[in-house]
Image (cartoon, rainbow, N blue to C red; front, side, top):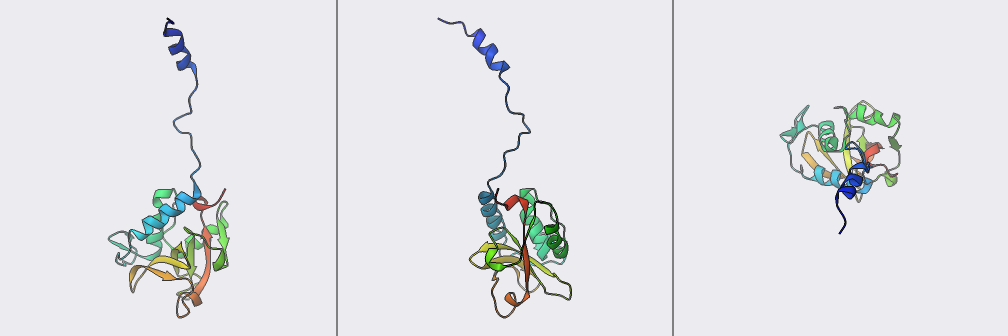
Length: 161
């Protein structure tokens, strides 16, 4: 029979990973969770300057949705659009290249960008508008959204490695 003391001592000398070790997220899981979190607010009311389930404006909605994913988005659709200038972010100009979890932008005012939403697949995005609150819409709608397409931004949290 072997004494256990030498084995216990060896176990205490084996280094373990530090508590702060970071495992890169699986991008596809992040995308699906962002889609699920966004859809959980379907029907939420619009509120100018709002950023909570009690009421969202468009950029408050995207900011709230991404908050659990380490993305600190500014509370402005134009500022969110400009994020693509930063390292790790990617600008997407063509709708056919947009993927679930990408921020999508539209020109709804005299400014270059006036609205932001989140792409959820199959040509659809989810956003909060002053007329309907949080709803799913088509990127290709020929009467409103499709004609106002500006581009999209992929965030580092959803980028493929």
